[in-house]
Image (cartoon, rainbow, N blue to C red; front, side, top):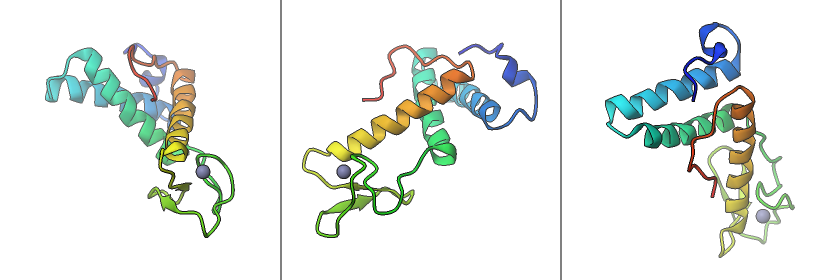
Length: 126
Ligand SMILES: [Zn+2]
């Protein structure tokens, strides 16, 4: 992450600037307050920033649609609610849950990279 990101120097640039500032603050908190190495702090902060971006701006599956496979959730198929109103099929291999996680984390990556943040080396969405 570059601390010289121009978005950080200008107030009121919207949600993406808030995400950049959040990432910077969380990285510093993880490094200086908790004592993680810089690279560990960046990976942990990236995950937190992905989660915040998703909670605030991530695309949610419509009611009745599995957020993983995008198929209808039929009443006879078991499913679980994820706390944000979305549901996924409850499969023995957790395939729908995993697919949903990979999809929203990838979307968050694209948004965060678009504002100039660098995804930490070694961070994966798996
Ligand atoms: Zn599904």
